[in-house]
Every structure is written in C-alpha cells, then in structure tokens.
Image 1: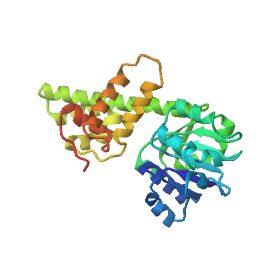
Image 2: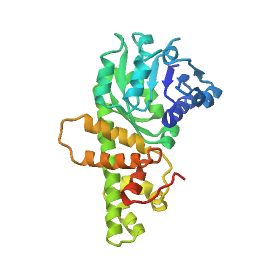
Image 3: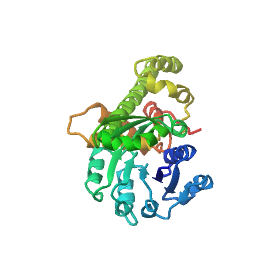
Image 4: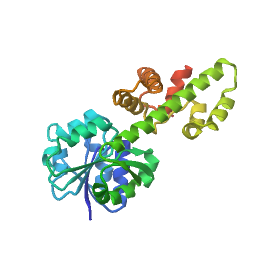
Length: 288
C-alpha cells in the first residue's frame, strides 16, 4: 500500500485527504492548525507533529496543498520543514497553485534523488471529496506513471508536459475564469445602466460563450449570496501570479486583477470569487 503524507488541510486539502482515506491509502497528515486534522485522525489518519516528521517512517509520496508560494516555502524550507527529511526515491507531489517559477525554484533546492511533480487542480470541494477533480500534471512520463494511480483517486489527471507545465496550465485556466467572471460583472453593470432587467441579463450571459463559468453561479449572483467555493482571495492571488509570470504585455489579466483587488479591499476576500460581480455592480453581497 502506498504511504502518503498530506500537508495542508484547508477546505480543499481536507476534502482531498478525506478522499484518499476513503480510497484506502495509509495517510499521515499535518496542518498548521492541528484541530483541522481531527476528523481525519478519527478516521484513521496519523497526525504528524511537524512537516519534517510527516515524511519519515516509510512514506512513499508527499502531497502538498497550500495557499501560496510563501506557504509552500515555509513548509518545505522553514523551521521543521519537510525538505530536509526527504530521502532519495521519495516523491513530492505539489497540488497547490503557486506558478511555474516557484515549482522550478523548489526543484533546484530539493535533496538529490527526490522527485518533484506539480499537479494543481481545477474543481472545488464537492469535486475534491468525490474524486472528480481535473488535474494538470507536470512531469516526465516515467515520473508521472507511479503517481498516476493516486491522482486517479482524486480525479482525472492529464500529463500536460514536463516539470512546471501543470503549474503553468493552472494559471492559464484561472486567468480565463477571472476574465470571464469580471467580464460578466461589467456586462451586468452595463445592463443596469441601460435599464435592462437584471434577471434577463443573467439569463442571456449564462447562455453566452462565457456561460460555462457564469451559469453555475447564476442563482447565487441573482440572490446576491456568495458562499465560498473558490475564494476571491485565492483568485486574486492566482491573477497576481499570472501578471508576475510573464513578460507579455497582457491587458485583460491585469484588468481582471484590478477588479479582484477592489473586491478584496472591500472585504470580500473570504466570499466566492464570483462576489467580484457585487463589487463591480456596487451591490452588497452576502456569504449565505
């Protein structure tokens, strides 16, 4: 049986770790706030005292699911960081959204013989808990093969290229999501100014080419309620990574980031990223 150490038990990490337990994997977990591990420990997972302690005892695969590059740096290279405890042959599978530059930087500082695979995901808590995530993996085929069964327990993995390409693909996807959501917000604001019925505009936009992003949020947007599925603060972080990761003269991504910055400054960071629409249209949102 593959022994897995899972590091990072936020909303997504907890759901993914729970899924791995349900699939029968031997699981050790660590989180900065230990209380978040209690439901998993009650089901048979072991709680490690530190990231370094999580990877000893015959662990084959270490999964990290963390908020941002700073969190990944702290877990890997900070006090009691796991990098110093990794051994040749162990695999570090980073499923965070940290960008390709961070992935390549981490790869250059790991102990010799430790394998790194980047595999960020598309999907939210329901998909994580039921094994329906879309996973973008960056690795060579020989490195990907041993981790593919674990990834298939979590969803549908696609090998998109070599190291760093999974992280790059995730930025491409999230750049598109943010652009579509902010464009929909501007469309609603325009409709309001032109005197159109808000529900009618939502129906038309939901059936438009950006409907795949907007339609699942249509009822929540109409009600002005934004329970977090993909937090606005995380979408803002991802768009910042997009603008930092390229020397291209992008126009849409910085504009989307500006709208997300405004929404975050208004205190909407813990709501769903679709709450940017409330910021754009000047409405007061709710998380309920």
